[in-house]
Length: 403
Ligand SMILES: O=C(O)[C@@H](O)[C@@H](O)[C@H](O)[C@H](O)CO
Ligand SMILES: [Mg+2]
Image 1 (cartoon, rainbow, N blue to C red):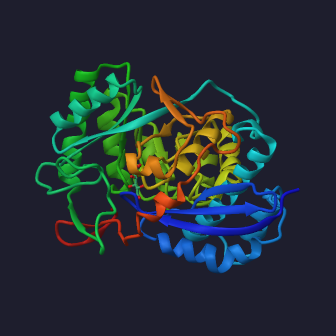
Image 2: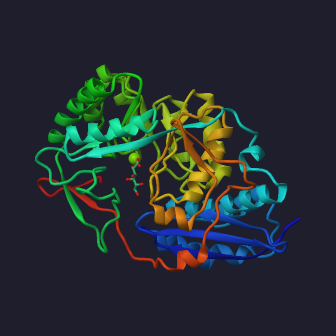
Image 3: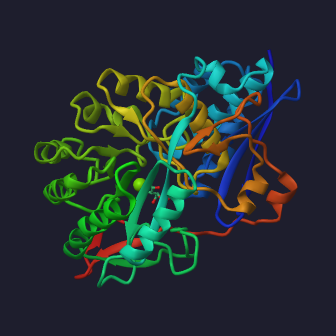
């Protein structure tokens, strides 16, 4: 059985920062794990370098569950985004190794394909409703069957999810947090207009999604859910901050608009009450921030009992290693819902050559052994790390608000 002989971090920034863990075994097999936590990358790098990697050397790479438990219970201090991202990176790398040794793609190790491919959704955003719709039409014509709509809010200089004119959307944009101004009242006026225009332009054969990004109170989220019902959204996401899982019951009481939450969750405990009380329809926890494939499968299994489906986070600050792992995961589980797909830049794809592919609105991880992603270390080295923070958000009166 292969034993772990070394593990190291590759920090690279092809347009944005990524932290990748590379584990090597005594038989030469290597495995990759994504360890990227947007805006706090070096916290995870240090957690891995200073506290996890020394414990991995000499262990049997195949003992994924035992190593997972060792890193989770053995740390004493449990859960949290830094710890669970670090554990996720180890977990992904070990599944990658197991697949390579077995000569099988990871989804075959997870029970095989439960579907032909994973339906994905992409992002359409614009400073105006018209620009957003034009982008959405382009993506529909590219074959996407599901499209997330985010548009500018009249009266606000910027808002979540909308790129600066002519630029790709990359929220971690400054050496210190940039500040944005938010108005719920202005926002709640424009989103129903956006969806009305979108249904008018795109019709009903495409799923439309929207990300509220934690910014509404429960009753405001209930109002938005009701206002959007005539346009049948696939979901509204992060409608209200989810530390208070019970808050979603208030939204549920007022609207049939499906609810998605969980991209910032890092363990099953963040979602247990939501799932067991059917307060949500989709769980967005993702491989890189929720403890890896090993833990995410537990979350998906609990969700399956309550007819909650997966809708994993898949923004560009999750590396191609996570994208690949998410597709192996999504292909294999019974309650797959949808997978977010923000295509990475050409520079990022060159650093992380991969086998996953997009076709006709669906994605497939490919059949290469393991996760099917590698890293070009020489190229990675040419993109040095550059500190970058996610923005901070304030109300018009200066109150610090959710970004
Ligand atoms: O649903 C999404 O994709 C967003 O919520 C993310 O873009 C999120 O803002 C970033 O991943 C934060 O790093
Ligand atoms: Mg989101």
